[in-house]
Image (tube, rainbow, N blue to C red):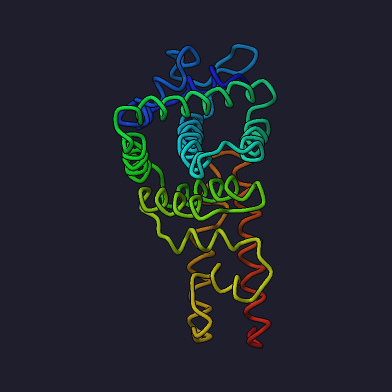
Amino acid sequence: MKIGKWIGGLVGFMTMGPLGALAGFALGSLLDNSTDTVTEDGTQDSDPYAGQRNSFLFSLLVMASYIIRADGRIMHSEMEFVRRFLRVNFGEAAVSEGEQILLNLFEQRKQMDKTNPMAFRNTIHECGAQIAANLSYEERIQLLDFLVKIAQSDGNVCTEEIDALKEVALAMRLSEKEVESMLNLRGNSLDEAYKVLEIEPTATDEEVRAAYRKLALKHHPDRVATLGEDVKKAAEAKFQLINDAKERIYKARGMK
């Protein structure tokens, strides 16, 4: 499916506010007037969740444009991660157009910052508030997970990227601890496992169990099922990493 037809399925909160304003610039001729998603053969998609997924994914591209430029560079590995994401979710035809949306967002940032160095940053904060008001907590957590993966895609997460991730998380009404948790998901040490569960090594066994139960509820893949099968699969992979962290702690403490 081409991005032009995909983005035509945007509904609800994406047609208004700072995200809608960015969409007008970033999508340009790709934005059509359709209120339904259109498939490759030109038929209407009856999926009632199409608009929700499309709004989630455009929100991701907007926030990704901020994370990718956090260190002042556009890394090939980060752009390639986004390309793979679009390819998996929308097919090969969507890749070049999705990349163009990001390039347009980079250009919009450049133009906005000419008059006010804080202009784009302030817009990102406003977009975060709009996302927080319209996406569920679980959807925002999954969006943050994708942003962390983008930052990690070059094998090194610099201080500027960590700061940008925390800034975006707070704008979306998430916490810095949740950023630290996701940054440590792919680690293998006991210290990293405690950070995943958002607790200190001094926590009691009962506090460990409670922390895991809390994480298991908010990261359960079923809570983002309406965003599509590929997003759910990514959530399942994340959920397994949380379980792995829990098992490391349980084993070290002799817990069952």
